[in-house]
Image (cartoon, rainbow, N blue to C red):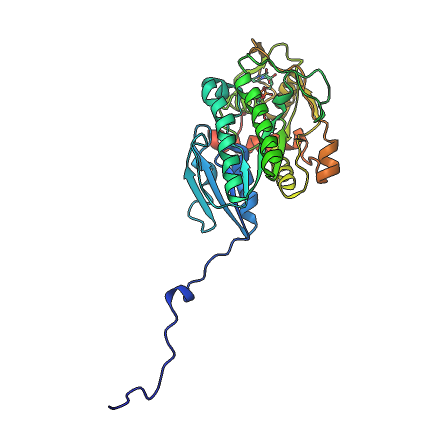
Length: 340
Ligand SMILES: O=C(O)[C@H]1O[C@H](OP(=O)(O)OP(=O)(O)OC[C@H]2O[C@@H](n3ccc(=O)[nH]c3=O)[C@H](O)[C@@H]2O)[C@H](O)[C@@H](O)[C@@H]1O
C-alpha cells in the first residue's frame, strides 16, 4: 500500500473554533426599555462594551423609535413582550421599569395597570429567583400619596387613598415593593428599590400628559399652558441623565433601598409655567384648568440616603434641562422657533 500522506497539512480548525464569540460580562434585562427612562438607561448600559442588553416592552407607552440606535447591534436584543406573561431569559441583572407612568395612561386601563405592577413584578421576581439575577424595581414617589411629611424620607409610610383613581398605580407600586421584600426575606433574592420622583427630558411622549412635557409642547405650539388648580401644588423635577446615573449606582451598590432618586429643587406648577414661558415663549398665555382627584399637594425628595449610600446627587438644574428637552421637542414637532 502506497503511503500518499507524505506532507501532512494541519487539520482545518472547526468553524466553531474560528468564530469569535462575544463574551458578555453582564447580561442585563430592562423591562420597559423602549420607554422614556428605560431607553436612556439602555443607552448608558450599552456604553459599556462588556454589557449585553435585552429589552422587553409591550409598546403601550414605549416606542421602538427610542431604541433605533441599537436595533441590529450584536450586544442588543429587543423582544415584544408583556410582563404580565412569564418570561425566561438567562440574565444577571433585571431593571424592572415596565409600567405606564403618566397618570393619563395609567388611569386609562386601571385593571391592566395593577396587573402590570403586581403580576408583572411577580413574574420578574420569579425569573430573578430562577436564574439568580439581581433585580431593581423602579418604584415611585407616588407611594407617599398626598404626603403629610415634607420633604419625603424613605421611612415615611405615606398617605395613599386605597380606593381612588390613582391607586391602581400607587397601591400597585406599594404591593410591588412588598413583593420585592418578601422575595428578599423568604428566598434571599438580591433586590434594589428606587423611588423615582418626577423625571423629565428628551424622548418623553409629546402627548404624554405630564406637566413638563405638556408645558413645553404647549409653549412651542403657541397654545396656552394649562396649570391645573390650584397651581400652588409642588413637584421636584429630575433630569433623565441624573435619574439613570442614580439607578445604575443603586443596582451596582450594596444597599437594597428603598432609596429616593429625585431632584430636591421644588417648584409650584405656576412657577414651572412661568419658567417655561420665560425660557421658551414669552408671549404664550397661562390658563388655569380643573385638576384631577387625589392630586398630591406637595412633593420633594429627601435625598440624604442617596447621597450617603450611593454618592449620588443630581447635577442638572431645571433651567439647564428645559432647553435640552425643548430642542428634542422642536425637532420632533418640526417647529424651529416661535418667532416668525
Ligand atoms: O412625572 C413623573 O415622574 C410622575 O408622574 C406622575 O405623577 P404627577 O406628579 O402627578 O405628574 P404630572 O402628571 O406631571 O403632574 C404634576 C403636577 O402638574 C399638574 N399638571 C399636570 C399637567 C398639566 O397640563 N398641568 C398641570 O398643572 C398636576 O395637577 C400635578 O399637580 C406619576 O403618577 C408618577 O408615578 C410619576 O413618577
